[in-house]
Amino acid sequence: MNNDQLKAAFDAMHADDELADRALSRASRGKKPRRRGAAKPLTAVVAGCVAAVLATGGVAYAVVNSDFFAQAWGNHGQGRTQTWSFLGDDGSTISYKRDFGDGTAPVELSEAVEHVGLSVEGNGYTLELGDIAVDENGCGSVTFTLSNPNGVALFEPAAEVGELVLSGAEGEQTLDLIALRFGDGDDEAAWSFADTREMIEKESSTKTEIHGTMYFAGFGGEADLEKGLTWVLNWHEGEGDSAEQCTAQTWRFNPSKRVASKTFTSSDGVEAKVSPFSVQISADPVMSDSIRKVSLVLKDGTEQVIKDDGVANNYFGLGSDEGVTWVSTQLIDPDSVGSVHVERRILDNNGGEPQLLSITLE
Image (tube, rainbow, N blue to C red):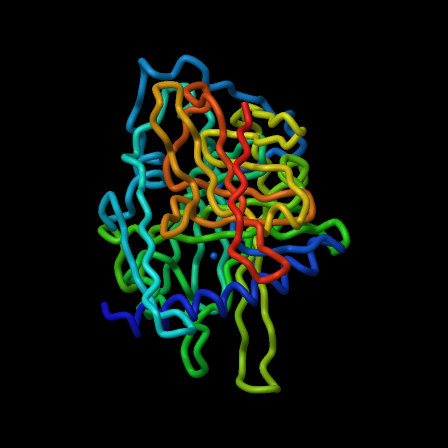
């Protein structure tokens, strides 16, 4: 794939982001979202469950390679390290790399996995939800299958780098968006939308059946999970200004388990909550926008980078007025983390060189 194709792919992702951002803006009820990149029940779902929080301490000695974690925290058929480049606005080449996990997980963590078993149909497509695991930061992942006997219409350059971007093209049998909503019912004021990324399993997917994983995070943290999860298909019928917007949604799913997070605090009160799936930093919007690097300094002296210049070991970051949350591409062992390192790039109001400010949270 050449640079022009890659740039087109990521431009398409950004266009998709704008659509999602409009939904997030409506759902956030005044908060400021910022990106950082017909129900058919298969099983009975019990609403109103009391969530059980699962600790993951003492995990070094016992790991398991379950189907869920092999998919959700494996490499999706993209190789252990994924690299890409695209042209910046000034014509320079911008390069990134992303490291995936090996798909193994602690036994204790595998106990947090639940089966969703819901599906929804719309415009010739069927979305089937498989297994899910969520954390106290309001983040998680869910496996899915998206199928259409006539073929799943994807934006192919994006699919080549593993991300599911629906084509949404006029004249095609396609979907515009697959969304995850917290809450259901007729009261839209009670809804909120998750920010999501969908990764394709390259080796097991076909033209008519896509196997993948949706990664998600919400503005409200664990409170969003308490509303229950509903998956929504969006598409349009007709073309141009006369096109009719259509939706179909699953029944609500209430996850009953949570993976615990561990809190780290700086000397000036900034908090980081680290779970096996995500890193959440409490920060005002000015600090959030200035974060250049986030890494976990492990007790053995090594470093697990979440975000850095040229490094994107996260599926996405979701920023709000309360802070930023990153969903990691690799599982994290919170008990092995000694501290969280945050580096900010502070711009000089007089036009001088930016200054770097480091923060340690222990």
